Length: 239
Image (cartoon, rainbow, N blue to C red; front, side, top):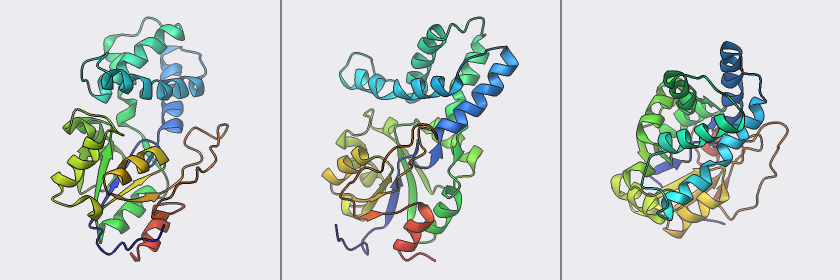
């Protein structure tokens, strides 16, 4: 898709999977947690199941089966179910809360910090994530992510891919939708943002689900396709 990018003023980024590597972060921290608490489980499967519960939990909120709650709360609901499934008992509330907040301590992909810093020279760079504001703020501090602005689905009490999330982001930035480019590894996110007028950039992350679950790059009619954030900066002409 050929589109002029000269009117783009802000880049909004999906975070989980696109900016940060949730899989290896959770596996590594889970294994350390397991060693400390004598928990011998397959932390790779634990991480994958935790992430797999994310979409269904948001759908329950969307359908009104659960009242609005932020991602920290949804992650905790999923975690409590996983603790039962994996027969993990005896954890204090403090330890459960620490484990749940692993999502605040995710490592960036190797290109993320440098690539964002480059893109920030020309554009506003902002999150546009289902993660709640506290989570995204703590993650930015932990990982050194140089955001200009943290925007979250929490501000709308909707979850992506609901159009309200994208429309509100553009409005809060004082921009029209076509002045914003959504950057994501997930085609569904990009399609939803396109539907409200955003430009889009696909940055595939084939290792998002770990080295044993390499995902094929899904074709998507994005304005740009880049291998990482530095390549995206190159395509946008940022030095």
